Length: 130
Image (cartoon, rainbow, N blue to C red; front, side):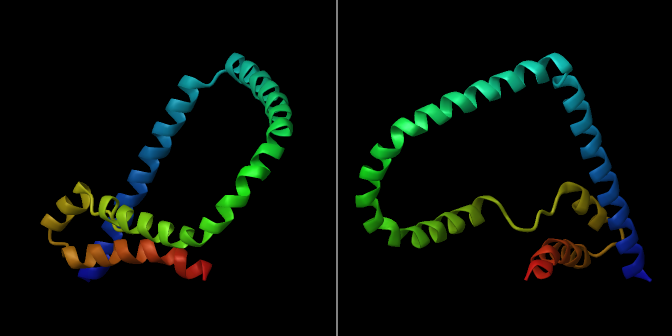
């Protein structure tokens, strides 16, 4: 009984959090975007694409000359990516235990069960992909 009530409360909490976030994004979008900005932004993007294409046509030979010494150092890329992932794991945890989950754990809902729900919520997309 405790597991089902904890799951029910956790789902309700996640639903409210998602609804609040979507509402904030909608408000920010409607505050920033209007038809005039879309029109001038579209013209700006089109002009930037033309200028970027012209610039790339001039830079491609230079990039090909400079790329040949870099191919020797391409073997270091996997180690660099592993190092970046290791540093990122210290600054951004995989499972976020927010203050709302903490307050929920102060009620008769066990923290271990909440952490297991967070873990399964985090790991499910990876399991579905592979």
